[in-house]
Image (tube, rainbow, N blue to C red):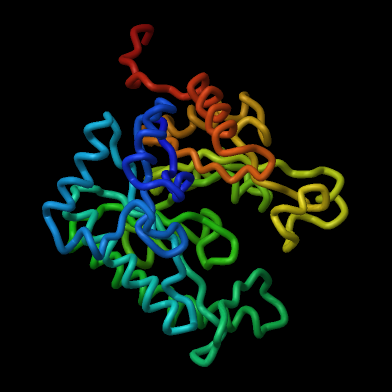
Length: 321
C-alpha cells in the first residue's frame, strides 16, 4: 500500500512547484484534479488532449520526481437539473476519461450526482426519507429516469476507453452516499462503477467504515485518508445532519479533521488491515480539509501518523500453516 495526497491542496501553485512540495513530504502518489469542483489548476484535460507533447511533459513532471498518479479526479454533478451545469460537468468527466486512456490511468474519481425532482427542476433534490409518498415517488423517478440511464452510458464509455474504475465518492447530497446505494448503481450500470472510499463522510452518517469496507469488498478501488470528529454534546442534541458553516466549529455536530484527530490509531490500524483483507492494496490519498490546522501542519501530522499504521510490504506467504 502506498501513501499519496490529493494535489488540489496546492491549487495556488503551478504544477511543478506543487509536485516539488508533494515530493518534499515524501509521499508516493498524487491524485490530480481535472475539472469540476477540484478545478484544473494542475491539469486541463481539454488542453492536454490536443497535444501529445504536452501529455509527455505532464507525465514526465510527475515521474521524474519519483511520483505516480493514483487517479484523476473530476468530482462534479453530472445529473444536475440545470442543463448548463450538467453539460459542463459531463464534458469534464468525459475529457478526464479520454485523458486517463491516453496516460494509461485506470481510475477516475467523481460523484454520482443528484437530479432534481422532475424534468422542470432547477436545483438538486436529495431524498433522505420515504414519507410523505412524494419523496419515495421522486426517488424512484430519479433512479429510473436519470441515474441509471446516465451511468450505464458512462460505464460503457469508460469501458470503450480502457478506464476500469469510475470510482465514485459516497457523499451525502448525491444519490450514492453509502454502500447500499453504491452497490445498487454498480449492479445496474456495471462493474466500472466502484467506490472512492472516504471514511470521513461515513463517520458522520453513523456508518461504521470497517463494516462498510467489508460490504463493498472488491468495489473499493481508491481510498481517501480523511478523518471526522463528532462533537458528542452538539450531536446528542441536534443529531449529525448539520447545515451550519464548516467554520462554525464550536457549534457544529461534526467537523473534518486530519487523520488521528477524529479517531485514534487503533481505528486506523484496523482500517488499513481491513483494506488488505478485502484485497485493496493501492493507495491512501490524503485529503486535507481540517479547518483547525494549516495544510503544512496537517499534512506533516497525517503522513507521520499514517506511516506508522500503513502496511507497505506485500502480503507474506505464511510459514506457520
